[in-house]
Every structure is written in structure tokens, then in C-alpha cells.
Image (tube, rainbow, N blue to C red; front, side, top):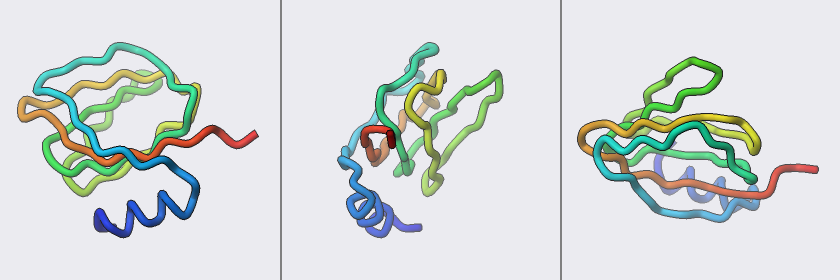
Length: 91
């Protein structure tokens, strides 16, 4: 899915759309969010570790991290640029 289609889908589904990024080699240790997140990587790479499993995402890859899921984030040596959708979890 291309960036425009992904962003349009997020908006249709009630997500707040945020353009962002993280610096090279940034590490965010275990944490959880109080919102559901859907992400598309625009450039660089990020590895998300959940339940002891690491999964690396590159440009064009998407992932979802539901609210309350403990995870860590490890950014690659080039940094990462992304588009993220955030919304309150379904009740």
C-alpha cells in the first residue's frame, strides 16, 4: 500500500495521522501506549521487539501495535521516518 492510500485508510478508520521519525540508533526500552498505533515506514528502519521476538521494518512496511502491548523500539543506523496513525482502543 502506498503512503497516500495508507493515510486515507487511517483517516477513514478514525486514526489521528502523525508524520514523525526517530534519530539513528535510538532505543526506546520496553513501554506500552494507551492508543492503538498503525505505522508505515517511509525511510530507514526500525526493529520492534514484542514478546521477545524482534521484527525489522523497512520503507514500505507496515505494522500495528495495539494499546497496552509492551514493546521496545530499536532504530537503525540511518534513523527512521514514518507515518503513524493513533486512535483510542475499541471499548
